[in-house]
Image (tube, rainbow, N blue to C red; front, side):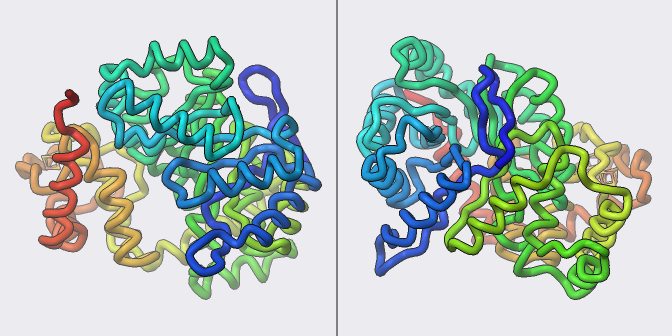
Length: 395
Ligand code: SF4
Ligand code: SF4
């Protein structure tokens, strides 16, 4: 296993165990399988285990497994505050105490504000007293590192990153998301501040393994490497020194063994020019299915009406590259739930963006098309309801 240090010099295994995809037995987690997989990973050097309040049964399952095997002190637990459910200081305490109980521990190594998409969420937490709360918990040793997990756009990521002295952050990042969400800009900005970056969705929830088009698989198979699709995805991340830990939601011993092997072999800078050509061909094969040739360069931004042009086009393409559901889901996360609305129907057709687009995209026309696909009426109503709940005034 390779290790990369956290902010205070503690070694973290570059492969982290994502504890949200355990196999089920009936309605509950299959504890026998989960224990075998966790202990196999532990024996192979994995020391970072990621869970969250809302991962049904996960905190309680890993708490039981760590206690039973006496390894709590030898591993790091990362879990998350369901910040979207917080209205005041007492609710922060309530969720945290419940998490400690589930995890059978009296401290959390890495405690993250879960699923932030906008600086407004952080502002709301500050109003609820989170800063004083963090200070107290860190002073008492109940929390060792504080951070946030993120799914919004790059600009909001940078705002949150620069607003507090974070110990860690967690972003969605993979070879298809190089310029979306926090993206490579966010990754590098965190690295420059000395903040370790934990990677989630390294294989886009398995899509970069199970849903690759023929051309992408062919490019991998015809290369001189004998790597699986998962290995291609993980190696792209390990190759970057700015990445600290890559989470993988493992649920078989084979997966644990393969991922541990990759994590012990793949050093920063190990990829060669010929490998990058393969990634290019894979991306090309995936992107051939796209609807708008937007590269995410952002030359068209900012829009005077705050329309998230690249974000909307990325989600529109995802509908056709992956699935309608995935595109709409990503749209809800990254465009639909920012405090300042960023929808395509805010466009006043000034044309400013089109003058700067190196791809000569008829942005105004394509925005209308994308909006029709991404926000059919039921989705529009659903997003509005969630927005009303998330951005309600705190008590
Ligand atoms: S044309 Fe629409 S999207 Fe483009 S800059 Fe103007 S308002 Fe924004
Ligand atoms: S300038 Fe064009 S290619 Fe670049 S992000 Fe905007 S729409 Fe996409």
